[in-house]
Image (cartoon, helix red, strand yellow):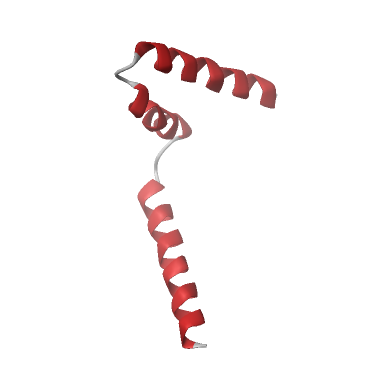
Length: 60
């Protein structure tokens, strides 16, 4: 029982930590941060932007 409570407490703290760290960020800021690993490769950067714009277009 105690291990179950610790697991729930740790999961809750993780969730709250992520929420706290992402507060005040816009969707554009988060999307820009996801593109950083591809910043040094122009081909991959262009491909990821194309795919992201395609996904946004498909959601409409």
